[in-house]
Length: 341
Image (tube, rainbow, N blue to C red; front, side):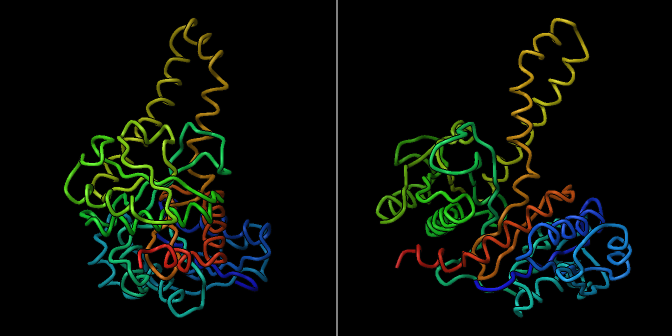
């Protein structure tokens, strides 16, 4: 894609309100001259924040939206009752070509639904998938970062064998572009590594993936393999993926909390933690979701990056960079080229 890339930011609806989203876009305008930020939300709130922070006025524009979808609202009802919600307006701007990609830290369901109502699915894709980026212990090798993908984690609760195959292609395409991993490994999540393990749809997907040329399919993996980095892309349906994702988040938070508790409790524990401090610090760095910005919703002909609801400026800026990289590399075309013919 030649020329500047325009990223529409849904400014409203995150846990911290518009301030952090605007600050992230403002920082991006100073460090990424190839990106133009289109801020969608309450014009006055955006303007008040921009007055207080450094930014490049040439690389930021504002599009007013009169309302927004809160985190605790039901997506379908909220979008129907608020046609001028910021996420809907932003999605429409992307659909019309006014922006090349969309970043939101708001209500996940509303973001996916707003895009589903305005974007098209890539030919050959029946359902979109929300892909989560997660840390692994494999910190070196063919790819440039320590992260891998698991998809779907909530957009498609029940996936057919063909859906799982499509998820595999989408995940591998994303890993090639964003992680710059030229030949990512792909696996199915199941209750055993044997080809016939798991529900019928997983067994069928295994057979189809094994026969696909150009895809580095390594077979089935179990839940224990996820944090090991056994595969670069792990495929499952949205119900299983969401459970796994919440478990991974909970384990990481528990380890950090236990370390803090131990440090306050006993002298010998503090001494032991001092010896482990570099490892704990490294764990914090590896599991810091702010450095990778957000998770892609894959399957649409347009780019949607879902940032964490608690995203602050750095995470928003990084989500914008990921969105720009995906748009510039024409991710949708890469996915289309990898699908079974």
